[in-house]
Length: 327
Ligand code: UFG
Image (cartoon, rainbow, N blue to C red; front, side):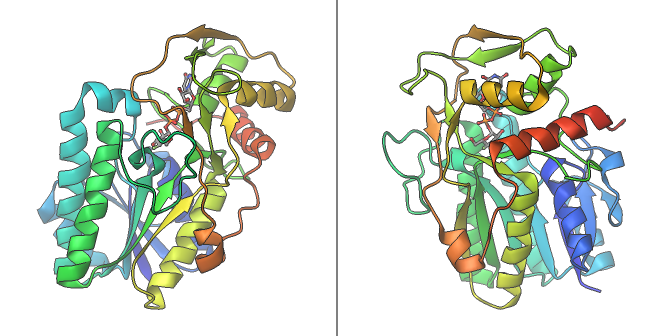
């Protein structure tokens, strides 16, 4: 059996990756400290509790499971928090990833799939964001991810660590079978917050900024379904196993939606009013982040099938109504 070590496998994207890996015949071993993840979300393979900064524990887990690859999702990932607590982002994300990468190399596990982000690009006026766009992150979250990309390149040159770097745009939706979904505590992401407001679990969504240079004044993002995103990871893993080298891929659809457009779609999908108020801009937010790349389609054969906004909101709503994990 081929085993894959999935850091952050108890989190939103990592748990969906575990489900997809299991369906494809792999054994996904979750490595997670449960700081932001959910034990209930670990349903598709073994669970090893541990921290990225704990090299001894990592060595134990590599020795016990002998993975053929690492999928590295574990990270702190909130832009707002990264602005106020940059040290946590540098330590956990960069030092933690370096510790993991060193442990992987020491164990001879030389296939590595890394979750990076379009937040590494920062603000670019009227530029189509492709993999060659200069990376100028606006916050410590994006900066920490860019630094990890650099570490991977150095470790490829020195130690032959083959890697696929995926720069995610905005991941949304939930498992179409509503077995797992998006659940953060506290929640900071647009779609789950909006669904909570629709459902009366919070008073209202606050729209962060209505004075951006966009047609309706609110920020524009490129939303991609979590199931499509993890499909790309399986294709990336196969690409690595075929010894194709190392590469960076954007994962977005190329379509941008403003916050107001997301609100309008949610109203129509759920048939409910969306209680919202408008507020000031959130520090660290870029005006517009939309992918302009088809490299993942061309090179990996990736074909997103659920990444239209209605399906993403409908799947997230179904999961929202099905309930949440308990710690
Ligand atoms: N937004 C609101 N109100 C909210 C929450 C969000 O108006 O209560 C707005 C944000 O200002 C932004 C958009 O909705 O314009 C999306 O915000 P999210 O917090 O859902 O997502 P982000 O774009 O900030 O960040 C997400 C992930 C990051 C990833 C980034 C790339 O959290 O990991 O997408 O854009 F890097």
